[in-house]
Length: 308
Length: 308
Image (cartoon, rainbow over all chains, first blue to last red; front, side, top):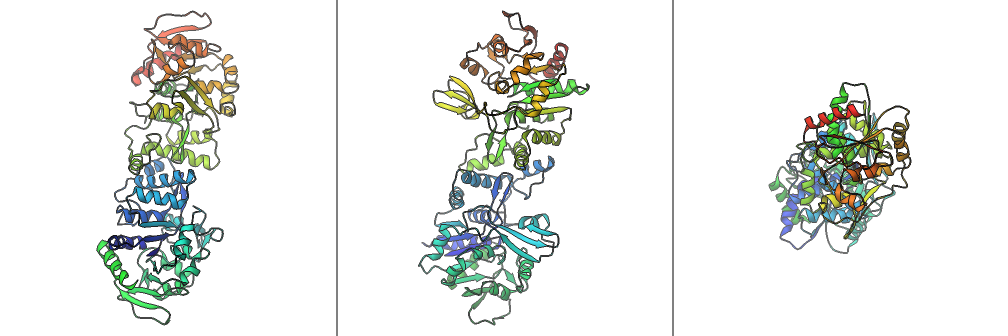
């Protein structure tokens, strides 16, 4: 199975998918958004890769779905005491991940290889491949257009708490970067592997992956199953609603379908959502999609196996 | 007063000097060795500057005379758990210092200005100037020649615990770097300011400063007082003995004099040391030079005022 991941929605589902696929021979190829990556305090922070790593390693903070459970913040606090505001609140254990990744990049390794080494160090089974969408670290930057001007995604979501109005979203540098070799190989492979788009924000978490040259074309040839990150007219978490509106999409499962309509085969929506299907090209399947814990995640993952 | 500092010997004395000079109008200009600086985990570690900062800020670990008292090692330990050996055992609070310094350097600030900003953030009185010997961070590298090959100072002293035999010591890159503007201004100033060479290793801690173009010439015009880092035939701490021998100097206060003979006016040796003076060009003064605590440091500092 190929999975597109970004933000915190899909990592929640990965916990269950990992359990369900542990007994199988199948590989999991997880293509991860890197448009929110940013160099902080000397090292490259890849928030969406880290959430995947930590979720699969079983160490993720299950309150926030980013960062490591019970992490300390001694360095971050010491920085503040010395009048230095670190752009993100980085934990002490979390920082070790960024350091290793960046040391490997400084040695000339590709982000894909650095991520694979980290995954092994975290004890993640090597049938699970975590594939950064590109090997050009930090080259794409999600910009949120607000009345206060353009903000980096992290500054909008963390410093400004997602409060400003959003008029547009853009991915600086996206035209210049290429998907990694591994990403294209996986998407081009002749196998009948299904592509699963996790319940992530379709604009800033999945959007950058889809914007890379050649990706949409490959998806058209595949069976693609997406899980709506919207239940009713509200995103399950995060700023998806504001971004979808800014991009002219309805904040609803229908809006999610519209984001993916050129390649989507199956859309999975929440059991409680109305059966709104106006387009016949997509199969709509209902199930419980809210993930509150590992059990929910496993249940949804098991269901996904049946529709994939 | 101008002070040359490096390693851990002089920082011990700075604790007392700061107290003694607090009631005076005089400035303390501390010129600090940077030949052991090294980029680790994304940021520039300046061991000799940090020991000066921490000693003056009253936060230094008084067991080791480097690092911050009661610091944690969560990131360092997490790195090790993920199979990454960090070259030095960096503390979590200590790491914040390296991050701030390096962020300032990445913004284009000079090491001298970055150090001044750090000193203010640590609450150090602005009559105390901490002056890195050069503004070319990481450009000089102390190399220890051993039967196992050349080692970086930190690798010799920390990883190899100072055990290998030493055949030579060299400072890679020293010919290409210039002393900072502030260092030369302070040394050239017409004032009657005394230069104090702290009880630091004359080869690797003070040696690089003396090797910079123009420094020895300026010292010849000044009254220079040095405190021996050797008591009897043993260094008070650290690898000074091995390095002095490798460079052809006797491991004794006399050997220390020989390191500095072209410009030295007064050598301060320990009370218990024999009066070995063979050279009439230097005045030898005896006092208690062992610094075991703040009281010893203050006593020696007070004595220094009388001979300066």
